Image 1 (cartoon, rainbow over the protein chains, first blue to last red):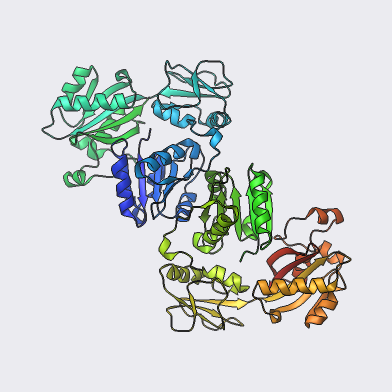
Image 2 (cartoon, rainbow over the protein chains, first blue to last red):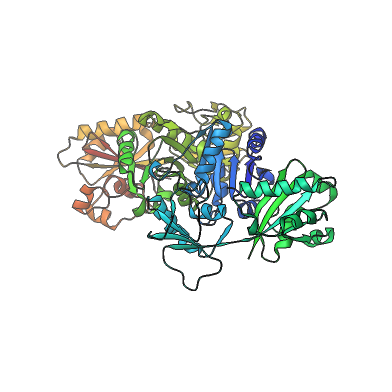
Amino acid sequence: MWRGIAIIYASKKDIADKLKEVLKKDYPVYVFKYSEANFEYIWKCYDAIVFTMALSGAVRTICNYAKSKDVDPAVIVIDDSGKYVIPILGAHWGANDLALLISKLLDVEAVITTASENFGVTSVEDFSRKLFCKILNVKEIVKVTSALLKGEKVCVQGLEKLPEGVNGYVIGEECNYKVVLVEKEPERYEENTVYLKPYKLAIGIGSKIETDPAVIKKGILETLSKLNLPLNRVKIISSVREKVKIVADELGIAFRLVTREEIEAFSDECLSPQSEKLKEIGLKGVAEVSALIAGGKGAKLLLRKITYNNEVTIAIAGFE
Amino acid sequence: MWRGIAIIYASKKDIADKLKEVLKKDYPVYVFKYSEANFEYIWKCYDAIVFTMALSGAVRTICNYAKSKDVDPAVIVIDDSGKYVIPILGAHWGANDLALLISKLLDVEAVITTASENFGVTSVEDFSRKLFCKILNVKEIVKVTSALLKGEKVCVQGLEKLPEGVNGYVIGEECNYKVVLVEKEPERYEENTVYLKPYKLAIGIGSKIETDPAVIKKGILETLSKLNLPLNRVKIISSVREKVKIVADELGIAFRLVTREEIEAFSDECLSPQSEKLKEIGLKGVAEVSALIAGGKGAKLLLRKITYNNEVTIAIAGFE
């Protein structure tokens, strides 16, 4: 589950574009040219970065930004001749998985360098991301992920069923290490336990003027279904288009109309780059900005805008 | 040409030891355990580092030390399952070459990620190292190496014949970029030109008490021959063993006897780790320390001690 993948190319734009084509069906993907890229923004706002350039250049670049396993994005390199895809940061935090996916999609060799015995385990961060949760005690992550890598099972409490594609976890209470879903901050934090609090979700919608509300509704439901999110996680739907209220009403969810003035006055450091279309009409964003405005102060972009049926854009923000 | 290779392993000591075995015939090689390694020392004092561990751990480690292309060592990773050898820093500065050598010696796959068209060119730094020279204007290196990588030929002046295994250079004067060997600092530095000044060399010798001087002489001559160094580059030979004077006299080179007290009083941050033998007799070094003492203040270790015929150690220091 990737909320946003940044592809950064030095000279081989063709590889970057090809990768975008194969990934964009399932993930929000943005391509940046190395010499023009704002790395502060990319490092902070994307959860995976794919460099298409020589490894040592990528290493020198990320050295300026790398902080620690629990906050850095997963980083991957595809070499200029498109022969290898190599996870270089966050191997166990998603980079191995993404490299294997790219390896399959582009038919290039994945260079996996972590020991194979602990391969395929889902990091706590990725687990939390899949559930659209906030990690309440970030410091405990490394301990629990290390236990996972050593082959320990981690018990999950507060959840009926594990999300698909998750490895290393069991529903239960009898483990040394745990992940616990809570509705509010616990009074006491147990050791070796990571606490996750599900975000409330705000959906932001952009659409063509002529788009049928039924298409918007279908887009929302299919997106939620793909993300394994039940409808009751969504607290508000938001748009500049009044007709989206029809959809919200049908789904029994609150609606927030956003004005062009509100969009103009809004700012968030992690918005996706403007599309050509948005540049034309002079808007910094629609779906993402609507979701963030509806989520209120402190809302966080959890899914960058994705396009449905070539006429609807959908973004998800989380708030508490 | 590597003056010293440091191998750092996390858990797979067997891979590190195997690599040391195949490299030590030709290069000074030292193995360090990751958790005990002094990275400040290794980063400063070795010109190549091979990590045998997962790539992302190695990347996080080197991020703490990497400064710039012209001062950092070449860095390579061998993954824990011993499947890949991957240059991760200084690809064009020797790391590609060393990775290819290791690939051949250990029969593992070299993951080369730089564009193939500029492959195999010798960096200016490596060129200088092969000739045991000091680079007088370090700042100009990046320009000349970039030109090499773009396929420009670089002219070499002040040298009759190129060293073996050097690519991208011609003897001559008609190039846009040059490397010039000089005996002393030029009055004016030309643009796009790197100036190299050959070091004067001091050879330090350690040997068993019973070693025949003829073996020491042979060891010195074979070492110089392997390094393509003419005898007249050596200004002094030094040892704690008086009989080494016989060898120096035969070769027509000055001799400097070093006392145990001098060795005890001497310190240099880049000495190789003590061998078990040296620990036993309580000496921090013999060949390296002798070479550095003979070279005088400011002398620099250019070749870590290598062992000849299991009874002689030879180290080379450079001085001005």
